[in-house]
Image 1 (tube, rainbow, N blue to C red):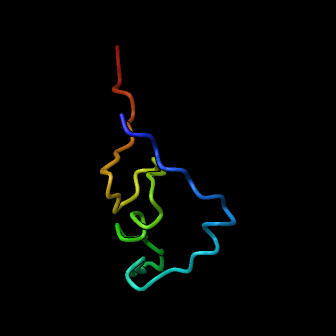
Image 2 (image 1 turned 45 degrees about the vertical axis):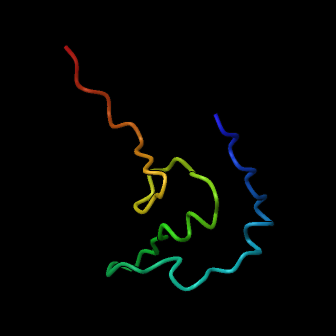
Length: 66
């Protein structure tokens, strides 16, 4: 199993400027990061992002049982 890439520190990541194509704004005014942004970041945050290039899907709610 390949090792997970080293995650940058908050300071290292904050020093990287956003590039054209890293995000778009929805009609409601939300900022949405693109797959390009996530790939530049270099790891999956496991939050189920809309454009996750790793296709991570968080587990859904537990089914209602008897």
